[in-house]
Length: 280
Image (cartoon, rainbow, N blue to C red):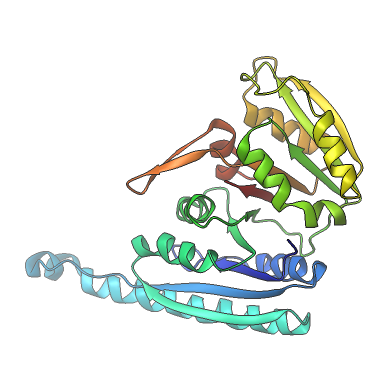
């Protein structure tokens, strides 16, 4: 299915999404001739009801300041998004919501369910953004593009790497990523051995043949984990191949708003080395 309706999530708390992420998101939309919407949540912080504590510590004043700052950052982000998206001819909609920080993941997930793809920028130390990304990945039923905060303003697709382990999530990710793989100048399939039991004896040749049916010539590579974590192997492969995008399945499930993630998923989302295309 082509990407025609894309959503980018812009964070306003505690730190705003950098404007460069807006450039990357709109560049991605332009590459696929898609329309892109942006959602920003102005976070509302409520002071505790204890009058004495509020008087002594000034919670009400601090809460009002944080709420105002988040609203200002939301408006600034959406304004820049609309200007950038209109210049590239990909503007669809700007969405402003007001909610508590605990309500953001569910809100983003609801919007993501009616999009072809959601883009979630994630900084290296952004725990809130990681939480939002995990919620969208596992709750939306749609593919998610997790983007690190970098200085790159464009979204090149010179080299795409597929992390292939024969699993259902990996198969779903490859199917969802076909529009990207068709655009990529080079596609590589990476199979990591001696890291976990693989579900197939056919290596990656069947995936190669499947991609050829879609006009995609992929190079197959098998790497021995050699005692390394799957996350470290993927990072090393991304660096050695100078990959622009990593396609992989997302492993995990939610337990009362807490996510139990697979090793590779947890490692990659926490510190994405490059944009990561994930499906669950």
